[in-house]
Each structure stands twice: as structure tokens, then as C-alpha cells.
Amino acid sequence: MELLPLRVEHAAEMARVLGDPVLHEFIGGAPLTAGALRERYARLAAGSPDPAVVWCNWVLRLRGDGPLVGTVQATVTPARDTAELAWVIGTPWQGRGFATEAARALTAWLAQLPVGLLIAHVHPGHHASAAVAAACGFAPTPHLVDGETRWELRPRAARPPRGVGQP
Image 1: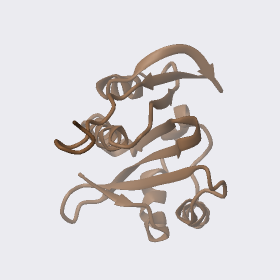
Image 2: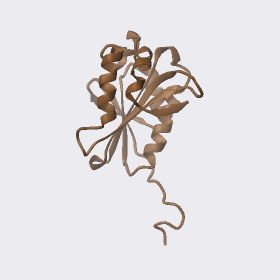
Image 3: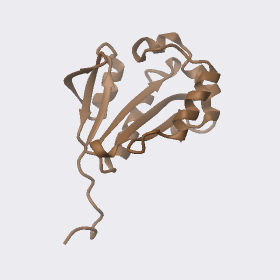
């Protein structure tokens, strides 16, 4: 799978990917039209209006000329030493490990940044998403946020390359 930076041009195809109302059972809301998704993607691509927050958004494409199958995102807040992750896979592609592959790639990338805490919010009834979080090394906490369980991972501090910052 390829992680491609989110672009407005992805909206039409992603409207089909995210268009199944069943998909929204756990993530909330309703499917957006291609036009509404295009507006949302334009806001996301423009970046956070808060200069202290960085939005990182990708669409997931099956390698080669494959279709888009979902999204993965992180909201990085350096001042709070946190990054919040989320993933969504379209219904036809669920159960094939795509969410785990994408979430692991994002988790590994974020672990290389100076971020001390990775957070994911998972609906308590969404067992597949909980399995993705666990596969990435996250652990559930007793904290509920908007009805979702907060999962956390404290990545190991990235070791500097040999000879850099070492005596």
C-alpha cells in the first residue's frame, strides 16, 4: 500500500470509498458528497489554523494503479508533546490488514519525531479498530473521550545516529 499526501483531487474517489453508511456506525456522522469532501480536503490540505498544531493527512492506495481504500492521519501538537492518530478503511477493503499496515507506518514515522505520547481514540465496540491499535503497540486507558476509549503509546526515544550527540 502507498500513503499519498491528501489532495483535494482525491475527494471524488474518496467519497465512494467513505460512502457506505455502515462505515459511519463507529466514526459518526454520515457520508459526505464529493463536493463536501472536496471542501473538507481543501481545509485539511491548507493546514491547521493553529500554528502550534500540525495536520498530517494521507490517503491509502493499493500499490500500482490500485484504488484508494482509506485514510490515515495524525494531529501533532509539539507543545503538548503529543500526536493523535486516526485511520479509516472503506468497507469493501476491511479485514485485509490495510488499517494495521497504514497505522503501523504512521506510528513508526511519528516515533522518529520528538513526540512523547501517541494517542488514538477507539469506540469501545469497534473491535477491529481496537485490534489495529493493539497491533501498533497502543494500550487502552480508562479514559473515555466523547464515548471513545483513549489508547496510548509512548514511543521509545529515537536514538541518534552513531557519532551524533554521543561522546
